[in-house]
Amino acid sequence: MLRKSNITLYLAIGLIIALVVSKQVQDNMLNKISVISAIGIDKNKKGYIVTIQKYNPAATSKEGAAELGSYTYSAQGRTIPEAIDRIQNKFSRTVFLESVEVAVLGETLVKSEGVNALADYFLRESNLPSNIRWVISKGVKPDKLLQIIMPIQKVSGTRFEEMLNRKRESWGNLSDMTADKIKGMVLQNRTELTIPYITKMGRTSKGISKSNIEKASPDLTVEIEGLAVFQHQRFSYWLSSQESNLYALTRTKIQDTTMVTKCRKQSGYVTWKDMRSKSVIHLLDKKGVPSFLLQVQIKAEMSDVSCKMDTSTVQAIAQLEHDAEHNLQNQINHLIAKTQNKKTDINGFGETLYRKQPDRWDRVKNDWDSVYSTVPIRIRVRVDLIEPGEFSSQ
Image (cartoon, rainbow, N blue to C red; front, side, top):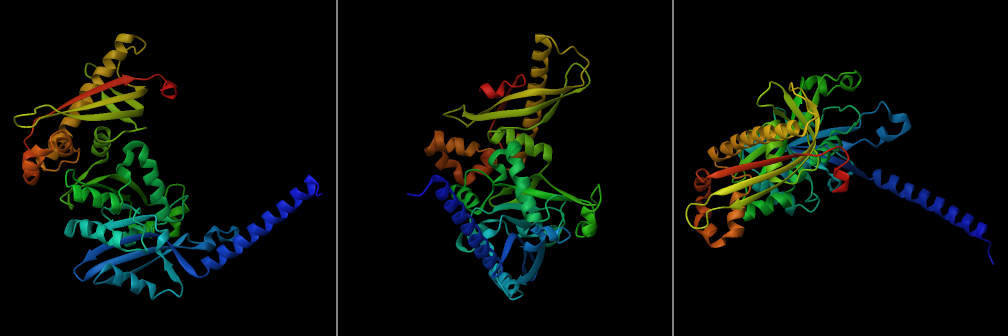
């Protein structure tokens, strides 16, 4: 009978052999394919411009610290597949699109063509995962954006993925716009689309140089600034960073964000951190013209107060909560008024009408843009201060 020590030894040897074989298989696969991290798509008068960002495996080795994390290749075609085929012709290895994490859409593309046909293409193309997350490049072409050399993360496509993951805390599922999700919203046609957009700060020519990551303060940085709003799958307008944060508070369940509100009776501001929100839309009028109540419940910790007041009393805390409610309610009112003026129901008031009164929705759905622009909408915000550590008990 084998001793336990011998069995353990055999298991350890087997594990080592398995790891070595697995590493060899992985290396052989990487030597036969070109792993793609991101794809950029834009359009001009001649057709589509497609850019792919290819991982550089050498950059992950100990000796590859000075290597670029990725390389980009672009081609133009009358269609997107034709452009991808022309890029493939530049490689001796198969282009592995199944690894794509992010699709960067050009500003020209979404303004001229919208996103419906693009979503159809992503869902039909078996080599592209349908859960690729979409972002729009504002003020910079996708091919240039994917060339930018990022601090910390060498591969910009992977960096964009990390940024979108971080945005989940302040935007919830609004940061996860994929072809299948977009197509589902298009088919329902009850709520308008919003897609995150990326902007740059600095000169593009500086960002595509290695010197961009060789300084304590990079010459160019990028950020996911806000959300692009669509009307019937065509681009309509941009929401600023502040507007996007407000919209997220009213649209989805937020787990963690920070906002600043004004004090009403004193000059100064209150910074609220770890904000968590829950919103619900009520249909108020069931017979005449539809009207709605948007309720937003917020729980947050107080991070900083610059108002000249003693914050140690219950009355002072209640006053700050009331001030925040008033301030946020005004801001949300302005945001809703903007969406009504633009005839873009991004909050889902039409969805509420459909769920509560489907027959009534059928009568107005073809003219919902105009109806939405005139419906009465009331906003009610409640803010409750939560002491540090209290979240963990909820």
